[in-house]
Length: 322
Image (cartoon, rainbow, N blue to C red; front, side, top):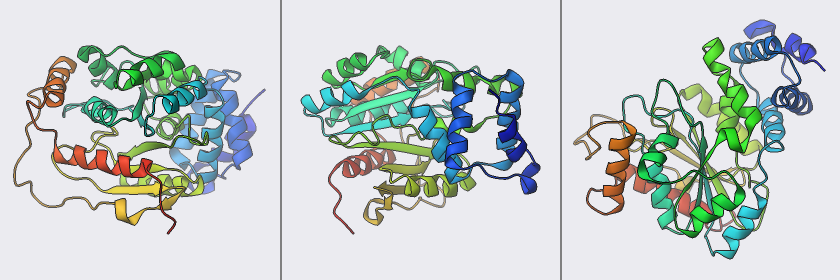
């Protein structure tokens, strides 16, 4: 098989490129994830989409193809229900820390304390940043590699980190193309939209969808509305799905794809009156030690992260019709 006909449509430049239908995008991504096309075609696809940008229909097809190739996790949701958890929160962690401490693990652990099953997924390593996987390791929290592994973490009121290499090997390969061509590709957007239980029913799940550039907020918002998602959309801290500990970011909350105005928050503007207590460094070991101190009540959890927890818990609760 070949994705050349699709590349011909999307590779005509920013102004001449044509968008794919949901079905075409699903077929294209399926071939890429299954490894049935050449490396040259994959590179052409990544560069063409980088120039053109993804439409809502294309994102829909890409996500559908990816979810069907993820590790089956339905059993974990059934077990979460049996454990009496109030819901599941999915935190896609794909950027890591460059200058600030990566506090995604703190957000995950604080949610787990509230009776929530937490799935964090992302890469094990990034040659330029400190990953959440490394913070979990430094904190002494083993990674999960099976549905039962998730349940074991949740039973201990602990968040679970699952490597994307385990959760979806095909997507992990697509993400790694970045280190060859030097640019991110649609796989990075798809990874931030994955929720294995979005359509499972029974126990509610909510995902945090973060962006780094303002223009992505519009396309991601349109996708969340189109797909009827239950999600918190926000600007990430260096691309991580955790609120900036120094100031309140803007929250856009969605349930069944409908914006929940009562749960949204505006960003704090202007100079900071004071800086919160934060780890002295951003390496994994220092960050993990500080997170344990925060969980033990020895240092305060930053207010924006507590606000994010409150928003996510509210999204897990039954939403009254508008």
